[in-house]
Image (cartoon, rainbow, N blue to C red; front, side, top):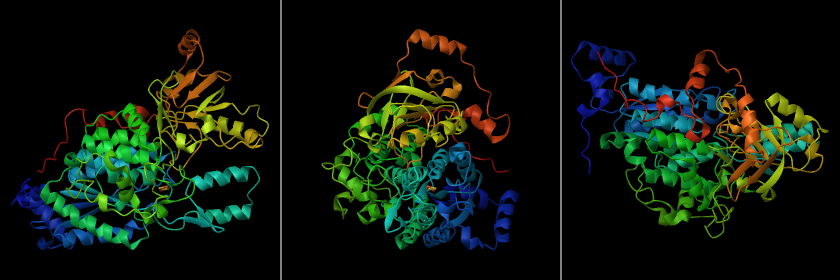
Length: 578
Ligand code: FES
């Protein structure tokens, strides 16, 4: 057992304890804020990284919830310091929050490194905030605990439950087809998001918080608690209490995020019917911890892990509130049995699987046994082929099975405005087997790999009653989306990946069981096209976008910045205090 730390071992003691001029300044300025030496002397300094803002509806409750965390820190004998960080609202930030995930990661890392901090509670939940906060805190290397925002209540309109994103997309297609009135649409707008908390489908937010818990970074059961439930308040206080002990125990992220923890996170992600975005974030998070997770690892685990969470969009009926009432993520982990690696621990310092055997499962239609899955394989499939030599992903569980094997002519748009002309024209010439392609939507082309990958159904095909078709892009799609959408094509078209060579009418072949995506064009013809391809103008000449463009990696590598990877240069530097 590791020996407990002493106060003199703490980072914050370097700021506050010495009898010198600089430390005197630190003490004096802490007194200026109305604190007393009794507030900090001999106590760990706990950062609470809070992604609350007036422009972040998913984290509205963090303004109150942070007080619960502070209460817990104080109860356990710590000194809480709230540090606000970029709130990254999926609803408002353009062109896409993905452009800024690495910025929040960088901000988190530097906030922790530059201040007198011994441990941290990370408050996030809306899509990119989870991976960003975790990536930054892993690189900072200090003990931390992740406090998930919790899902919002079920949407409700006209007596029907509505799921964020998923039902909006479905109803929008119906509205475009003339089946939903303006009044009905307004009713849906008011009913689909009716409390604080993140999206309550199994979209990116729910997936990523489940991944954080399965990786051992949350208190057991924390990720499933609805934001509006009083259990969430108590859990917040408990996060504050626990992080103080984690500091004394020196329970640093490298002791929790092991290869076993990453495998557990992938297994749980697959079983939840996870968002396609999870692939990118899982790779980036694991690599920050020095674990070289690859697309093929994800596909391998996916092939043997059925989807057992019957939550939209992979499921048809239930939402995250139902998931909590059915037993939550702990119940899902119980169903997974020995698919989880028992050697992994969590923030409690005890095995992740401890107590799972006694976890109640209240509804086996919501959280299915392995023998009665929602989908027989995991949520995501990784494709390879001459259109995506470095990989692409699709969510087979969320698309019409008739498209699992498909062959059809390409119809290519080079930009979103060009795509819109195609999909909004009720007479655009196309056939039901058409493969609709959007390019220049990847990490550099988008820029930031926006969620354009669930290309809306073209009016010309909706007239024929179609509600799904094969679509391909180097973009991402919202975790709440669905359909036969091939995403994350790598390398992306903007840098000359093979998608850039595809032309209208070329035959594209998708074979999900064989994990293939190819264009049936002779290699000699492709070589000619490659030789005449011209790189587009760069998107940014200055500012953060310029840094992003110079350093972002492709989707199969997790879209992290090349200079933030663990293996880049020296590990974490401690600041010098003069
Ligand atoms: Fe925040 Fe969906 S908009 S999680």
